[in-house]
Image 1 (cartoon, one colour):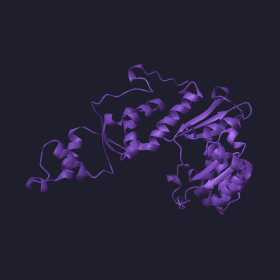
Image 2 (image 1 turned 45 degrees about the horizontal axis):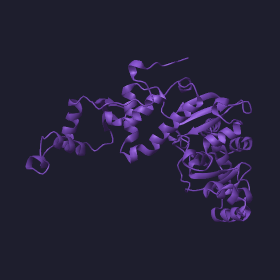
Image 3 (image 1 turned 60 degrees about the horizontal axis):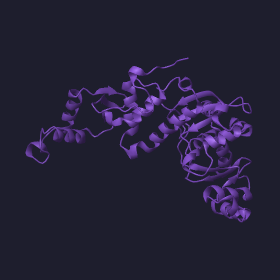
Length: 339
């Protein structure tokens, strides 16, 4: 990683770009570091802008941990991709398998593993949108230290390692830290992509519980309730009116969005007005009155009448649906520690 730090500092770029990369590299997860080492062999890097663009899309690459040459690549593919047992593995010509795999995918070997470009890298950074970049794909970041690695390393969540045979963020971090269990390490820092989730480091007694909740919120944000329209805007708005500052409460909110009436700013007000007018029995859409009805105006009147509160992403209010507390405690019983 020292070579990469040295490399990006020598790239041509603006002061703003250099400042962005400085922050990005300081918070880059250990897996991201390993992916990037291979990615820059696959994608040419000539300027700071190029480096910013690729660091925003590291999730477009697959990484095979410790597959440092054809033989180890063959072992990785057989074991983690094909689920070969140790008995079967002993009969596999792993070097031949790895060579063929490398010829097919044309990835890059480093001393940490093997990187493959799965999705085509796009021009995300255009030279003027630094404030819109998020540092690739994460919901929670935790920094964990150990006796072997006292300065700590960053881990991005969600981690999908439990859904596959392959080592991902958490597995790689445990190995690099030189620990078998999370209670052998110590939490140095933690942050959430949602700025309202504050004092995250002090909200949990164990790294494992924090990682579990971080994963679950990340999964929810990735799945977006099976592609529900305006899911993220709805979630952020619900957290806004609830004054949510805790990860466990944010996770519960993500599972209870049916408890909120929400109209996003990006919604089609005429369409919403039609739905509400029909629901309230005010007018029949296929009638003469319906054909001359101002649905957009009715939508705005309905929002005001039903007392939806204005928020950053639209209008929202808590409705009468029962809110189920699975990860957090009900507000009357919730005790927030700020130690």
